[in-house]
Length: 423
Image (cartoon, rainbow, N blue to C red):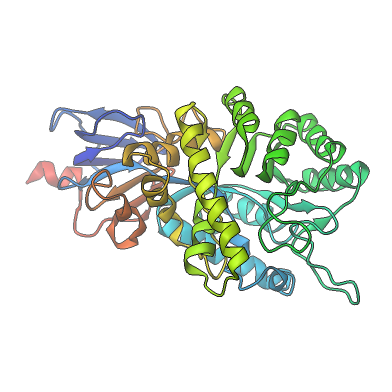
């Protein structure tokens, strides 16, 4: 079994405990031992020894709302124009890019083709291509006129979503995506900014439609993720047992209470990143659109602060994957959490690691630097607790380890244990 010994590192373990100096031994794909006394750990003669020189060792990041197949698209209709073969290659590039930037796990929030997430996940798991741990999503399931329906009435145009109306149609699509191997079924019960006739405060799916998808998921041990900006959509999806609530930015007091009541099973990813980018950086906004985005940003930030104080797991994941909000700057969401939501840097890191491990359904073995846990680790040049923006700079990631294997190996810091002993 291969071993890697990290010496002289400052550990942020993801639990919320204060950082500490330690040596950390990885054996195979697990963290075998953590020694707080310098030199206390011994490794096999052929082990790789990395001198951290005081760098930070922390869990790999988890992206809660990933869209690798959205390919930094300039527009949603453009996704339908990409042939599936090219789309698969493009998605391969972006999953590697996310791993290059420290995301050792991604929870996909919707695929732009029915099987693209599934095929990429399977290829990563088989070791055929590099990429993070990945939970594959279905395409977005929406209604006529909802977010994702970019069809034209006068001619055929491919869309990135599937459009269904009525419980039976939603049930059929859910069954198809379960058959194909999706981990998560994605639904769009609310509207969104810029959708004609279905702005963000509207709720476009019915109880029966949401219930149909949730029933299929329940019987097949799958999860449902919901695009739910409006207060009514948040309440609707919680009533039917949805586990992942995206946005919840326009939640009212009743919706916040319901989220708190479901805090042991539900995850919330507000995707502040895309709202910030649309309002602050996209440009060319009408006065009315700017007003609506400002309202959603302010209310969404206030709601997330309230949910975090109530013990709800609020996770970073900013809907990156669009030209105006591109991958791989996904780690910017941690800075948004600190600057806009009032999280401490430690709380933002916990959200992206320990809570992320739970989101990946591996809460007892992923997301912490802890003995027995999976060795998904980052060695960072600097202290993210002092400057959370460090995690946005791939050059500051000295090493990236996924499942005990170096994806990015440290330069000029590695020696074999046997050679060190002989010196």
